[in-house]
Every structure is written in C-alpha cells, then in structure tokens.
Length: 299
Image 1 (cartoon, rainbow, N blue to C red):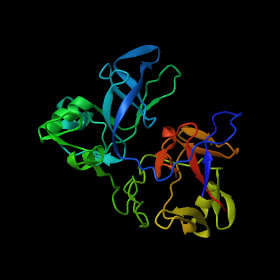
Image 2 (cartoon, rainbow, N blue to C red):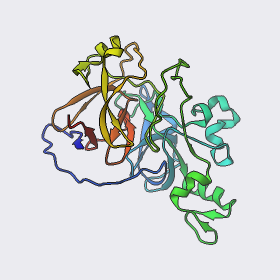
Image 3 (spheres, one colour):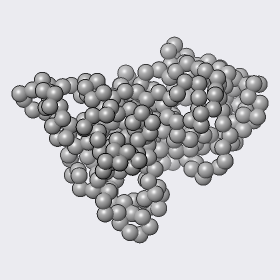
Image 4 (cartoon, rainbow, N blue to C red):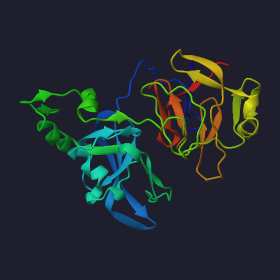
C-alpha cells in the first residue's frame, strides 16, 4: 500500500509521521478551536457562526455564542442516525417543527451546505453535529451515568454510541438516492464513510481499468466493456471489479482539484468520498485537510 500526502504548496518536500491502526469513533469529545463569523453578502449573520474543531479538523455551523474557544463538546459525524431522545430534540424538531430539521431520513446526520460565507464568498459546509458537553452530561445523569463527574457510573466515549442510540445510516437496499433500482453489491465495511449526496468525477478524469487508463465519460458510455480498479476492504487487496451503478449528471459547478505531493491531480465534487488509509475511513473531499494521506495504487 502506498500513502500519498496532500500537498501544502509547491515547496512541500514529503516526509510526515505514519500512524497505524487509528480508528475514528463516530462520537467524540472535542475542543472548540476557533469561531468564525458568517456573512450573507456583506451582512453578518446574527444567530449562527462557524465552529472549527481541534481534534479532527471538521467545521460546522452552530448557534452563535453557544461555545467559547477551548470549550469541550460532543461531536457526532455525518452518516449516522440519531435516536428520538430528548437530547436530540433540537435537531429532530427545531422549535417543535420537524420540517425545519436538517437531518435526512431516519434522522440521518448529513453534511449541510449553507449559502453563507466567512469572507471569501464561498459557501459554508456544516459537517456533523455538536452538543455542549454539559447538555450531554445532564442527559446521562438521568440514566445514572456520567462523562466528567463523580457519583455516577462513568461512561467511556465509545460507549456513547450505544447509550445514545446512534446507529450507522444505511442506504435503502437495491436503490440509488433517486429510488432507481441498481445492481446489488456488497455493503461497505463497518466504519467506512457512506453518503447519498451527489458525488462525481469530472468527465475527463482518467480512471484505471482492466484496459488501462480511460476517461470516466468513456467508461460510462461503455459500462459493460470495463472493469475498474477497486480496493477490497475485507481482504485488503486491489482488484478489478464490474461497475455496479453509475449516473451522468449535469455540471453542477462544484468541482475541487486535489493535488498530491508527487503531482497527481484529481477533479471531484465536494461530496465525493476519498479513502484515508491511516484513519481507516472515507471522508468527503470538502472535509480533507492539507497533509492528509491518501491511498495510491501500486499498479
């Protein structure tokens, strides 16, 4: 397996620290790193702001002044479903109205695009949800448990997934996100990042197939003539596999160019998942950070 780091700038000279067997828990206790004002046009938003998290590099939109820099909070990542408990009421039924919820089906946490910016006129994405740690602690105490104080049964962070009833979201069997039937395939392994948001390659992006490097638009036009290189997460091997489903969409002008330290480039939409081997997970392009390590085929 080759690891390729995202390039910081043209003078980046490689190196870096490799860490093996790091797992991401969908629920984490995190630290507020930064608070950034949001704007619509030139007018500053009064009720919400952008929050940056220290531990995992994610950012999200939260109620203004709900957190201070250095505060601890409980973070839950996208593509997990909340349970219908009082702790999550403000996410499931904001102001008592479920129609105002930003969650998807089955109370699924999604990455949400806000037409607000931080001064650069680029839209802001909110990735996951955040709860003040004292709110979580108050709820746990009703169950006789605790995260941070004595006198109750102490709860490890990884146990929160089960105590709070958080489950991995699974897309409906044999349908795509438009309800169209597709060929069945093996589910992604446990912990692998899944999403039903629009995720695409740019039409001229080269893809490695059993017949060599081919533009993805040519593959889509002759789907039965190609097998594409895939990574088998169960056996940890590369293999050429038949294409199970594809869609051709109009240009949505949401393209991102990823450049690695060895000069390779990928052009993808913001929601396209990319595998990070050190973290053993997928993240969407918009969630990547400079110096993240990507998987590169040895073929």
